[in-house]
Image (cartoon, rainbow, N blue to C red):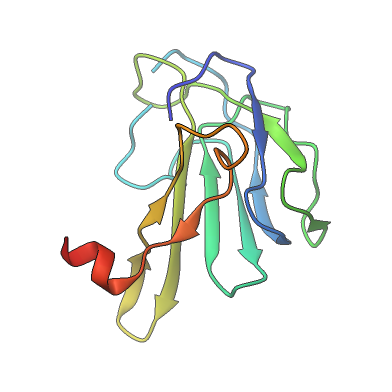
Length: 130
C-alpha cells in the first residue's frame, strides 16, 4: 500500500502482537521475497485466528510490544522503506500457517466509502470465482 514515509499504520483487526523486528536502517530501497526478511515488521495473531504481517515499517516507530493486545484501528507504527524499494509503502499480508506451509488469505478493502475504507473482510469463496 503506497504511503508517505512516517504515515500511520493501524491494526485492521484486533489481536495479540506475536513478534516485532525494528533494527533495520532506512536505505531507500524495499521488496524482499519475504515480508519479514531484512525489514522492520510486526506480526499480529488476529482474533479470527489469521496472522497479519505489517512490514516495511519506519525504524524505531513501532509503538506496541510483543504479547500486547491491540484493537482494530489502534496506531501500530509508521510506514518506512527498507531493503530493495524505490518508494515507501506498507506491505500488509494476511494468512495462516497450515500443515503444508503458509497460505495467504485474500482480503478486500473498500476504497470508495470512507465509513468502510478500513474495514477489510475475508472474501467469500464465491467472490473469488467471479
